[in-house]
Image (tube, rainbow over all chains, first blue to last red; front, side):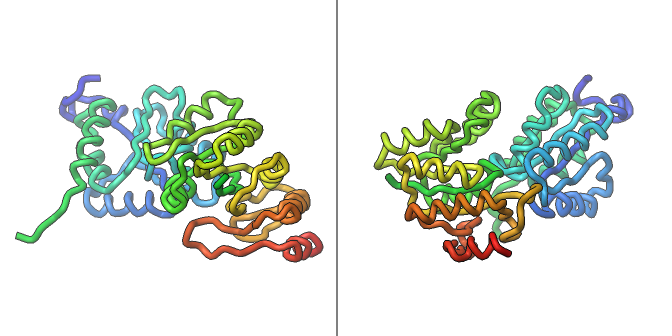
Length: 142
Length: 161
């Protein structure tokens, strides 16, 4: 798939999808906050690790990916080494069109939603790594 | 030997690696679990979680027993997945500062002691055996959460009610 093509040129049936997996209600809160700002949170699923063992959480993620019907997907998790990340990594093994990104923050989700029509999976991931990092900055009053 | 022993069937996760990693400041976090040690892929996944603050090792109970004996001045945080494995370590000569019963999920044959700790009769008996060997055992999940010391009487009461 060509990167940087306009939405009208790209095959929108393969528009990037996202799954956010976190502790507690963080995933839903991120999705809800993004919805207030961008409006369109289609193909962005929010999952919690609440009450799930590792195998159960792996299954939740796998089911969410399967529901995407083959769309390329980024699984956003809260932090490396946590149960959400541990489950996501195991769930997407052998799924070539699915990647896992830890350290999810709202700027990252917003950029994903606003720019996913413009990039393929690899370019989107590279962009989000940079955007996520760059979003962390000290602010001053001027 | 200086080590903290946690019983947690979630194996290694954020509470262990981030919270207790920061609070206890181990040199090495060890998942002592024969089955995970035998699964090369899973072992590699867990060991890849080392981030420079401490090492992460997945090995058998026997290997952990030897590690603790051969490295008496190193600071270890050891995770086992059930009270039986904790008892096996102690019976093999390991002496933890304290045993935390942190997480044992609700499965068939177990009853709730707390929201995060479900015990079978065998689990409770193994914890009683740990106490009998002079080891301090407490219910403790997060570092700043309230800890509850387990006693023989507490476990006996759990078994009979």
